[in-house]
Length: 231
Ligand code: URA
Image 1 (spheres, protein in one colour):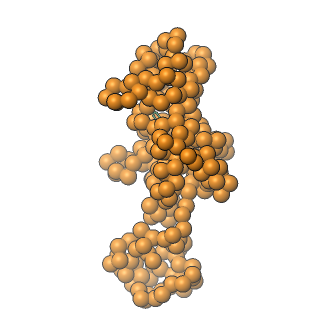
Image 2 (cartoon, helix red, strand yellow):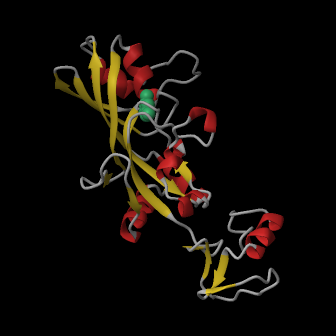
């Protein structure tokens, strides 16, 4: 169970059990061949979820942490999770750049990630943009019609740009290419100085979620995201 939950190899799991770090229904269990059929298992006091149980979180990603598992890019968003959660193989549904803040969804469910990120699902992601320089007069139309970005073989899909004056704008994308907002602004002659994602489909970044904080995604929020990402 420990190894299937992704917490350790089978060999490491046996060692953890021998060290007395695993309890079953509150009692330390030192027998690696103990069969588990619904009992509550903990490792170092943290509940071990059934390998099949999925977990989804909404996080307020702060600026300065990387959406990566590569320690060389530390600090990582995964460093913001407590130890029990760090052991679950959470993955990111739609990464943000290190310098971008805002709504991030973390989940153990690969299908959910596909639903939220595959361009065919056209899930809307809204970005608040601060930029330097000036945008061309036809910026709204250019975003709507698509921009061919350097190195890409197809123009961007229709995106909705709203200008808010004084170097501020909102851009809604329905795909997620690397550094897409920054590259679209650069292609139009402006430079993004701050970027924040505040909405995915109709899920707003919860206003009470401070930068760096996360909370489980509620079932109705998950259901809404699934319904809005159906084909
Ligand atoms: N577009 C970007 O340029 N960066 C992000 O983090 C997200 C969208």
